[in-house]
Length: 442
Image (cartoon, rainbow, N blue to C red; front, side, top):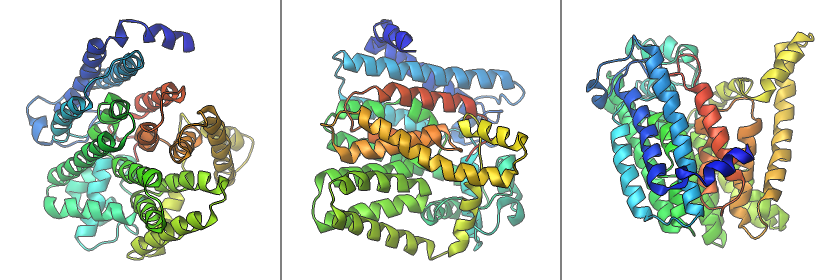
């Protein structure tokens, strides 16, 4: 793999013009998949720009090839841009931001590609908007046929596993969309796109190397495909994550700690994975024996989470605990589970064992990653990245869009070998799980 990477790094792919062209082709193929909805790689609905081209519903192979080829080209394009940057290419990051903004503006008006999660968001928002509790009921039980129809078949009987703040966002979109599921999804896509670009603006203004930060986020074709085209809430989690990281690096004193804790609490209020950032920021503080700072941040974060969950009570945590038992390929725990059950262990026992082992494995891998990055780099960035990346590698249930936290943290870490592995892992997950959500998504 290292030999292949070295060869490509000094090939014509590292020419900025070629790298940008390859990235553009990858994104264009992904957008064509969304524009030809409904098909096997999209939700079974149409957003405004998806009416411009005929559906590929009866040509599943074409849609699949376009999407997978688009993912591979996006990966090569990203690699080419990063290699060109390491060889001296210094594009204007504002121009990259503006170009990406145009792509995002188009993409949010196309049917989501690669997962049905956005349909689940819409269904949970519809339940909440009509006075129901998305943590104790599910789209199928609620009985709104228009919304249930677009939810992935595996998830129609699944209550929400997202935090209360995510439900607020979903409810807002459904309040606008009303009985029109397409409108609700469109609103969710627009909000997601705005947050994605907002993070790009923040990185442009606050990063030590705004070019690298922009290449890793706003102009990153792989992340654009996964977060924007898929419409995933992980964009919101990444936004809270980078805000808390930048505050930790730049703001000192009690009020800085309060703001960090608040941002971590809000991230957890969207998805529980926001806790990785809290643990990552606590890591260097504990190593420096800054007990009071750690305690302040933790207390504020816990209070924020408690306030958010108080609107739904402990019932909102039950679906999350049940979902934590899920295992899927390409996680190595899937093989461990299969072998355990083959030897006579019950599924429940294997879920318990895996649930105990994978956090330990995550800490071990995070420690290895942490030590691979130079000691002169800010630990407030390195530790959250190490934990987020380790989680992606060892968690039993992970998808390409989960890498958003690792990518946004990596924007603040100078060049290191973890970049190539994060890119490869993201692309592997993208190819493995791009299915229009009718089999997998979450």
